[in-house]
Length: 275
View (cartoon, helix red, strand yellow):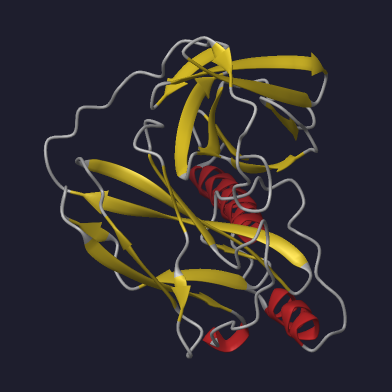
């Protein structure tokens, strides 16, 4: 092939690569006019846009015309600090209308990227539509913050990274187990049938049968996929006694970290499982 032919072929290859990148970017972060117009129709009451097909929740800071905008992304280890953020819609306007989801209009989930240091916070909304919460990131590392909310008739999860400088020592993912402890409680995980998980809570070897409601249910469960931290906020099922049940759908082929929260004697406890 001549030099001119080789240059032409190389140019064609570059064009194909950039076209593919543009399509992938649009799927993860759709900021085009089409996405904006669709969301504007939703806010006007003309129906909710469907979530971007095939994109797991929490992997992008912007999706379906909505964007998570934080006032800061850098924090000091172990120091209580304030985080302000907002959900921006078309034209960068702040979204103000949110519907309750599991008893709260905004859930903020924080976890270090090695799937440690889990936190579940409930920010307060100000009159301008923005959200504020106090948080303490205990150790150095990169943390993922997930804003979990419902607006326009659709449930959404947007995520951003928060950075804490210092000597970061990542921890290995704990081995898979169906048992965990939390604040003196023992929790047993079972899967009685495909797509359903049940957790039995015990203390001092005896079943805890007087669990208290937490966020309008017997418990709260978040599943995070190892590697990319794809986010799933799992729906609770009716239960009784020491059993807390959730409908999970199809099981992930990749390992996940499960964070179960339950309330007893006025305190919320978190049990973590690798599955």
